[in-house]
Length: 177
Image (tube, rainbow, N blue to C red; front, side, top):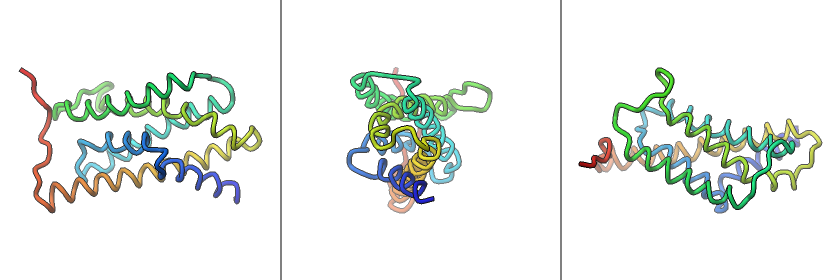
């Protein structure tokens, strides 16, 4: 249990520090278009991102996938920019992929795959391969907890600005002629 707590705490610290600005910005970008009443949708989005992150972190930790860190460091800012752009330019009636499931859920999962690759080498440096499954589970549970905390803070700030301070909320998409 002590190992679980250690890796859970490492997962939280992985998100809630200055070096994890990419995760914080990505989660904030996911939150851009959601009012506080849509917290369940946001929960699913953040969890999809964490699942993607967990998959590639595990695959890299077991040596199944290898990617150049240079490519990953290039792709991460692109995931943030494209997520923020999608949310700002998206029409109110969201583009749906399978019936009832907005495309943004798949983007969150896919972009989680990219972000998970960035930390794999560092995680293995801490870890080795002994008890890897339990440590990955605890680490990713910590990541999910911290990302949900970030999402809650962003959505709360959005509520404060839009509802309490009466600053008009963004009303939909940016139209181009």
